[in-house]
Image 1 (cartoon, rainbow over the protein chains, first blue to last red):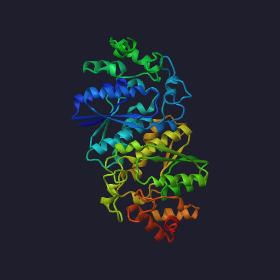
Image 2 (tube, each protein chain N blue to C red):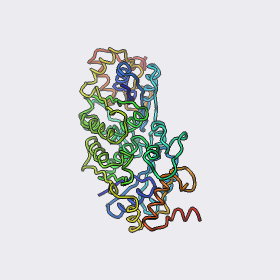
Image 3 (cartoon, chains in turn brown, purple):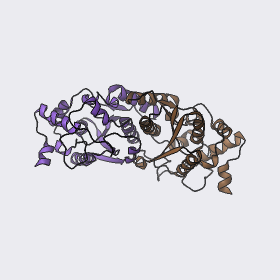
Image 4 (cartoon, chains in turn brown, purple):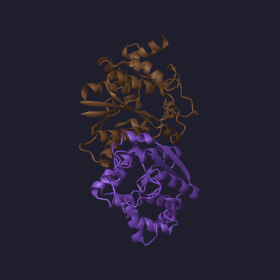
Length: 222
Length: 222
């Protein structure tokens, strides 16, 4: 098994990279800058790859900002919503067709490398609002990739956290030594996590329920 | 019907833009620079949109060069093959997963615009080698887009030239007034068409069989 891991630099995809680093014959990480405000997560992605000795490819697709409208994740005109996610605030963070774009680029790279896996860290909490974080989407994307390319063997779109809540991902990561000080979650573009956006609130809740301290907050606040 | 047309600046997609400009309530054109040597086609795309009064969006995705390997269309290390296409020379021009990437970006824009069509100008001659130019691929991509997004109405991936040879596309285009002096076909990066690469040979053959002179060649050679 040789895998391209889509690595945002957040908690979930960082855990996935640690997991597959231990399970696959070869792993490479792909980070795509799509115009997100929280580009700080990209730095975290690079730091994790350096620590793990994993080849890291960073692609500049900032022009995507021009097609995804007023998503709060990219637009200057839309504030990142604060507080626990509701259906409405989560919808404001939808970037249209984002995961199909990410997977299609990962598939191009995996095809070139003759790798047989593309791994994506969607988790159970993403399902409610993001239709491109659900299993039927990944199954369909996998079919499209396999129909559309000459491949030596079938390409697998691996989404192992699909049914796991964030707390379980966190527990798994800690059990395999994931360094969460080298991750970034906050959706705002500041140097410190805001602690108020949906992403920050969700992360804090996962650490609280799992019974661990967030090393990122300790480091940043210290 | 409101359509985003993927416009390369070549003969087929230019014809498609003319066709849909006459059939749809609204049309916008999307051109994506993916690192192709024949960036001259991009200028042609812009000229056609200006002539037709169609909004044109040009996206810079040149970083794609880093993931598509040694395709002759993008790599400095691979020569564009000359002569009529054979299976082997056509394979050298494959850009892995290119059309899934193009469609997924077009889908993001169409979703943002609340348009219901993405149009792509794959034609019968593309089928032999490019698996992402065949109907099952487009059907699967359409399914993936519709599963992965919140859409007011279903998104259609329209590929009207799918069963048409290039000569028929050309005849159609001429019948509706397409200006082929504002197109570009040659895969090499020079200021004039080389006349030798598979794309040039295929274009010349289409004009010969259709019984028309190629206004681009007349203009360039004059």
